[in-house]
Image (cartoon, rainbow, N blue to C red; front, side, top):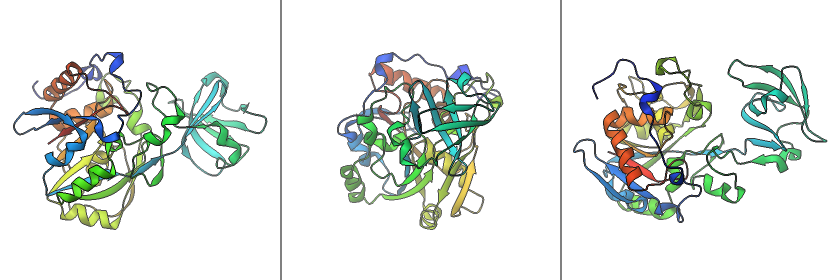
Amino acid sequence: MATKIQWKRTDFHYDLPEELIAQKPADPRDHARLLVYNRATGEKSDDYFYNLPRYLPTDTLLVLNNAKVDKARLQFGNKEVFVVRQFDPHTVEAMVRPGKKFKAGQIVVLTDEIEAEVLDVAEDGLRRIRFNREVTDPVFDPYRLTPFPPYIRQDETLSDRYQTVFARTEGSKAAPTAGLHFTPHVFERLDARGIERAEITLHVGLGTFAPVKAEELEDHPMHAEEYEIDEETAKKLNAATHITAVGTTSARTLEAAKKADGFHPGRASTDIFITPGYNFKAVDALLTNFHLPESTLLMMVCAFAGYDEMMELYRHAIRERYRFYSFGDAMLIL
């Protein structure tokens, strides 16, 4: 497809059989399948994730997002408060269900001990809510759930599997899912090949998983997400001759953080929206899962690999019965 001036949401639609939506991760983690695509040659191959090290250039710096998922979903019977951001010990920004129960000015009784005052309602439906208890109070613990995406059945027995083995920094509202496939065995094989690693932190929020509702992509508002790069990682990034981003969250962070004079340590936020036509400044290879139709994540990988090429890779993955979405299989784009 020729380069388009204006992309539409529906350009990124594809039909996925429901049975290909993974409800559980591969067991062991590193036995997920791996689709490898070489942009330079157009070659693709089907393999397994435990063989990832054989495909990576030995001079690459593998960049992982060490964000840890909060139990941000609070379920009180038929009422739900999904905490997106915390302002102070009592006050949060949240998505709620059902919305009609959480009108501005109302005090919502959630349990015998927990009440929520709805301070205001934003245009996008987010509520600013003040609880009568501190959010960290153990009284909330029986109601905390892992924020699995809506296409995965809620199953708290899988909560540990929705964290990467290298998760460290709590605050994320969804897992950086490309990292879920790594195991100590894969890291040992990476070390044996001399492949260096670095970690960044991007707390996944609405900027990553909010659906695109606007027909024209230029009309889609991206929510900002916070990221952090420490001094050691900044040095590694500035010295790297080749960078492999593990996941779209790592890629988003790297592209937002790369300046004309390189990478700098510190905290910042990004609302960068990467669509086809974007010129990548930092990322040379990308490890990613298979994403929802019409999502900002699919738009990003199309920008990286090429629109026609990526849509054909997705058709190939469907034909070959790859497993899709957060607990699904992986793709390496070289």
